[in-house]
Length: 296
Image (tube, rainbow, N blue to C red):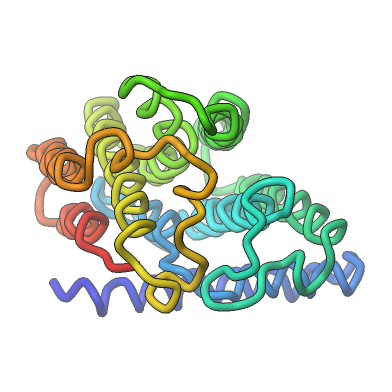
């Protein structure tokens, strides 16, 4: 398969769906909706929604049937970036090559924009016309999975651990806990939820959960390496913040080469988790390789 073509097609598909959804949100204050649209349309890989659709198809499902869930994951991810960029957090002026939300709309509106995107994600997940096509017990499990991955036991908890770890010496298991929560939880949940909505059997869900855990950690290690080896032009954001804030990263703990070896081992682990899947899982296998080879 041509991964570049696949990624572009899926990215366009998800972005069109998010744009259509926002166009219907006419009851929101105009400025708030503009701010949401500004960050949602700022570009990015759209990896999380693509993983939702790829996992659904890997177990025989239909990408169109999980599109709302895919959009919800991108909304949650975008909200997390808006809040991550705030002065109280990483204090970044650039995101994806554009001024960050708080630089354009002010800090208060940026906070509200993140809040709105997080809440809207659950509105999209539970939208009645979509929910009518999914067994209630499946939808409840998916919503719970998303909430756990996004909240205090997942992404938000990982971000808290990351902040608390600044200027501290952590053990490798502690670093892995930070990043499995901060980055890995949402990536893993995207894969699992796509499969669940496609009514995957338990063994398939378990295998995809292993796949998601491996790519989630590999993605963070790749990010850590890019943060020291990349450039602002490559990444679309300022580099060097992790070093300046003395963050707990894999390269800082293991050195760049050992971190890279760990990342490649995780990529192989992800592909190995798909051993019992047929050619419909080819995009997931390609995405595991893409995650460790990407340059942005």
